[in-house]
Image (cartoon, rainbow, N blue to C red; front, side, top):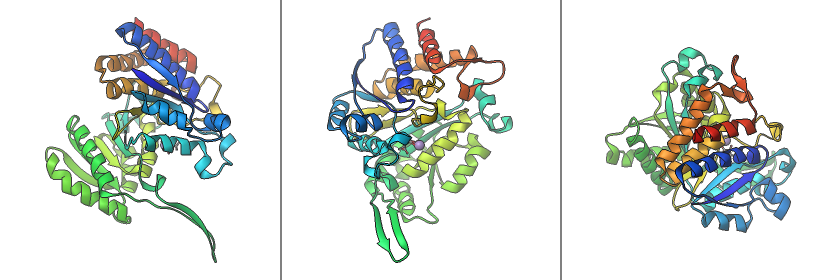
Length: 356
Ligand code: IPM
Ligand code: MN
């Protein structure tokens, strides 16, 4: 399997290193081989080539079977105009690979119940949510502009969706729901936004093809509230790009930490992309304190969704579970009585766990 490796900026390289240790362990145990090709993206690409998404990176990614990404961005590049920022590189590679469906599973390792800032009684019933975020449309990719007006500068970011863009991700979401608990909540602001009203029309018209899936609609503000009030009510959440970005960060706290959530991005081409949902966290970069589990679990998703390697993917999940059972914690999920470990150590123990 050819893997394009984008370590990126901030904590990106250090968490990706840990994911690689785990992949090495997987290849030893299951006798498979991963071939890596490193590519530049974001800040490190700007420093080396002047642009956040070099053509060579697109080339390496499209010629691979999967892309494994750390994180991009940092204060050093904040002064750059929007289209030259590191984040533009990330959006660019998502668009270039046409990975319009971003799967963000939010599940609670029971060992981390008390690490979540939410009350025990909220988490007591458990939850298992799959947030499906549209990834290549909406305000992220709509027209962006600034003009001078009599009232000062005016700026806008257009939230636009075509019915085609809505339908293709909705079909994926319905299929995912079918393999789960067959419930889907479509999150929007149809009381205010025309684009949301189109989402309702399009999803409403294809719903009959998935009559076995129970579909409901929920406004995004209500969804933000319901997520922390009663997370157990959700199975699949389908939503547009910006709402998905916000709600998945919120939902990560149900799981204890932003450092626990992996993601898989799939779409129109055979190449799929796997990345933690967290950003580059420049404030903690290079200190060996970042939680590598989101990156490691992203590898787990790569094995399953990228290569169809279910048992290898389960081995990653099981190893993480066992390491948590044994009481190892990074700072973000640390609890009294547990053993505090750094990024490197956490990566090594998970990798060792795979080989025992
Ligand atoms: C994410 C991140 C990115 C996004 C940033 C880094 C551009 O927050 O993957 O959720 O907004 O999509
Ligand atoms: Mn985000």
